[in-house]
Image (cartoon, rainbow, N blue to C red; front, side, top):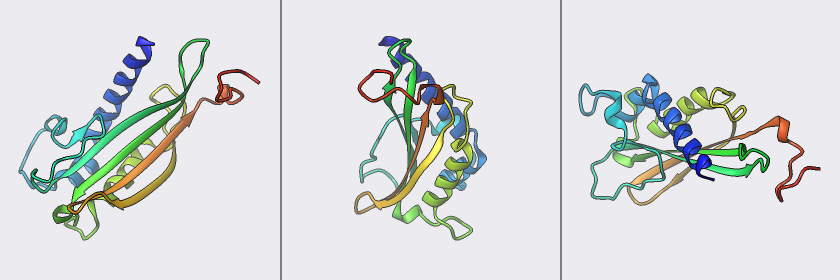
Amino acid sequence: MASAAINIENYKGELILDIINSEGVVGAIDSQQDGVFESDDLIYKNVFPFHFVPGTERKADCYVLIAVNILRINPANAAFVDLNLKLWALCHAERMRMPDGGTRIDRLAEEFRGLFDGVSKYGFGTLQLVDSTEFVYNEKFICREVNLRTVDLKMSSYNKVGSFR
């Protein structure tokens, strides 16, 4: 099962590179609040490869959180068959408004959809948008959760208890 952990790490690494190299994502996160910066500076500051919840003592900012959940594995070769990608756009209420009047979490959700919906370059099948849900995270942060899922069509007859039909 060690190879599955390595694959998750690589998968998240590729996702993060696409996120921090997206001008739309970087612009929605920062909008020049801190001046000119390198997109690599966002990793572990604003973009986290896990579900990180900033403390309320942190400055008003915007964050992208990533989770990769393996829902099913092919027992023959330990390849991921069914994968769920969750992206959270988490933004402090004071930073929600974009310069053009939209909201940061909505802009980020649209950027995520453009980057990942219908994409198959990650090697696990085609990612498909499942839903995009907004909610109040706590008294200071608002969140939009974007869920994408991929199912390897070659394994569509594989059922959840680990056998082939």
